[in-house]
Length: 82
Image (cartoon, rainbow, N blue to C red; front, side, top):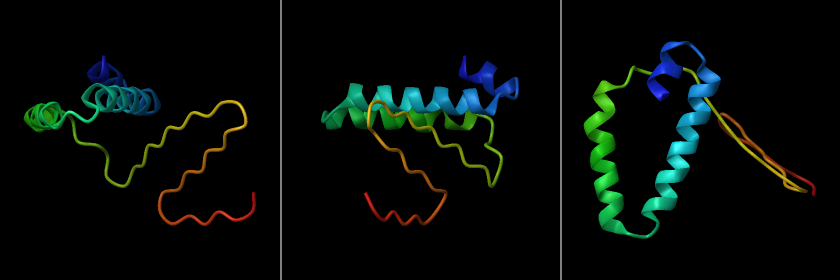
């Protein structure tokens, strides 16, 4: 699905899908260093098969609920106040 989304030009959907998979893999690996290493090896193995991301593009995805706040920046960010 990620390959199809990326090929169809829907960069926003591709970014969201990537973020969801990244989050799922982090939860799956948890603190298991062996599993983390195996996942890293898989990513490295398949990385050459993925299309190159456009240079200079930034994809940020955030979700907040309730009284949460989300602050995102492409570089430096200064947050003041409450």
